[in-house]
Amino acid sequence: MAFNADKWFEKINTGNVVISYKGEVSSELITNSLEVIESKLDDLNEDSRLIRKVYNVLVELLQNLYHHSAFVEGSEGQESKERIAMFLVIKNGEDYSIHTGNYVHNSNIQVLKDRLDQINALTKDELKDLYKLILNNEEFSEKGGGGLGMIDAARKTGSKFEYCFEDFINGYSFFCLNININ
Amino acid sequence: MEPISIEGTPKTPTVNFDATSGKIEIKGRSIPENSIEFYKPLVDWLESYSSGPASLTEVNIQLEYFNTSSSKCILDVFKKLESIHKAGNEVVINWYYEEDDEDMLEAGEDYQSIIRIPFKMIEIEE
Image (cartoon, rainbow over all chains, first blue to last red):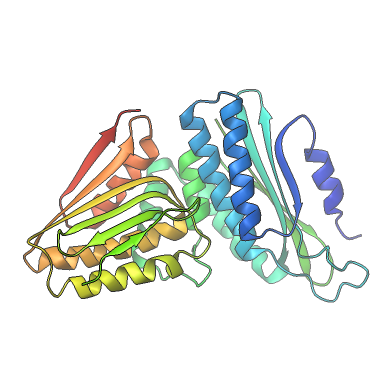
């Protein structure tokens, strides 16, 4: 059975939700969400260091959704649902966690998995070296990146990514990603 | 050479490039989805400027946030400045960061280790 992303979303969308969103991720939506998160964290009297980290990581993850969410082709009866991406920022005690979910073509899964596993296996100093290597040497794709956003998020949080790939339909999967910030 | 003067937005920085005074300033937030579109005119301007730069080019970078898509473009800006410096002109980069913003200091140090121009790390007290 195809994975039900709505259930995934509802399961996470509980407790102390700072922001949650499900829908098309446009440039304006990112601008507005960043404004909301900044003012909410400010209202919660979080220290500026933590606000900056949450903000920085959220920028990268939302822009990944903006650039890389796949349109699921030929899924009758599912119109307008397929391009949907999701994100949530949850406060757990002193920590924040950012969750994102979007659809990816199955042909991209291995590359994503390898990259995330690689990032998760590296120390802070190794992440710094990899960041500089990609920054200085690798050609950027038109969509930017080269995985630099995820490397940067791992560097700034010192946390490991958790992720999943759930089989959807017509050769697409739902890709979920989660990172903690404290 | 016409100066560049761009006002900041929530996602793009304030930019002031002035060939006469040799002052180059990028300030604010740089988190656009398409950074190349924003930075290309700046890099092109520096390319023209490099044919007749001021005796001292003073670069002030004071960013609150920048995304990784901007980070490559900022490096391109620095590389243009590096070639001006290599040609025997004085160039100095002032990298500003807020006192508790270790990540921004570290980002400056990343550039410092890649670019052969004197960097000055300047802490801003809150």
